[in-house]
Length: 308
Image (cartoon, rainbow, N blue to C red; front, side, top):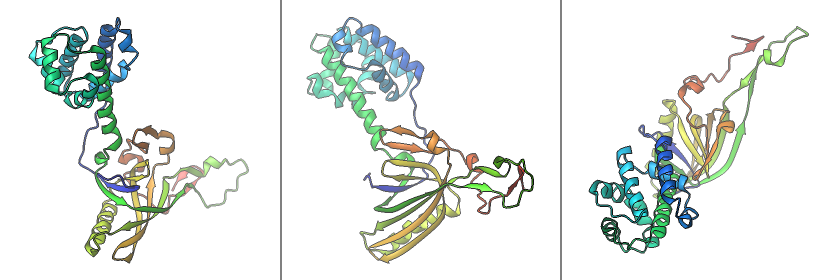
C-alpha cells in the first residue's frame, strides 16, 4: 500500500490487534537468560526481553511457543533437536524471522539450518544464530508495526494537505448571573470535542468523473451513517473522528479540492502515544465517549450548574 502524505480510512471489519502475553514473555525471557548465562558474548549482542516479546507476538499459540523455545534452548546448548514437534514449532512458526536473519547465521537456506539443528553436529555458530534470529524477529515485528495501515480499513489517499485548523471550545451559558459569589465552573462546561478542519487537494489521474464521485460518495455515506473514521496526516493518526461537514469543489476533471470539518475527543492530546508508524491520537475510544456521536451543534446551555 502506497504511503500517502495524508489519508482517510474507512472503518474495517473488526480485527483483533495482538498484544504480547506478559506471562509468556517473562517465561521465555527467563528461559533464555538462564540458557545464555554462561555465554556473555551472546548476551551482550541481543536484548533478551525484546527477543522474548517478539517471540510471543509472532507465535500462533502458547503450545507452539513453548516447543519453539525448547528447540532454541537445545540449539544454544549445542544439543541436537531430535523432537519433530520442536523443529516444526521453531522453523515453521518463525520461518519469516529465521529467513530475515539467515545471512547472519552463515547458512544458505532454512532447510540447511534445520538439518544442522536436527543433527546437532556442531555446525551451528550459536552466537551468529541467536543474533541473526533476534535481528530477524525485530525486522518482522518492525515491518508489521510500521508499514501496515490496513487495520484502519480502506485507505482514501489525500495528495496535498494545504491547511489544517484546530478549534478548541468551552460551552458557556449566555444568561446573566446576578449573584456576586458565582464561580466560572457554575456556568462553563468542560472542553467540547476538538474541531479539526482540513483543506486539501486530490488528484484524479484517471481523469474520470466517476472516480471523483466515488471518493465523495464514500465520505458522504460515512457522514450520513455517523460512522467514526481514522485520519492520518503525515505520521499523526487521529482515530475515531466524525465528519460533520464536507465540501468538495471540482476544479477540473484531473483534480478537486475539499474542505472537511471533523470532531475528535479533546482528551486525545493527553492520551496520545508514539509508535513506529507515528503518533496515535484518540486511541481506543468508544461511541460512548461522544454520547453516541449524536452532537447537538447548538449545545445545551449550562446555567448555575444545571443543563437545560
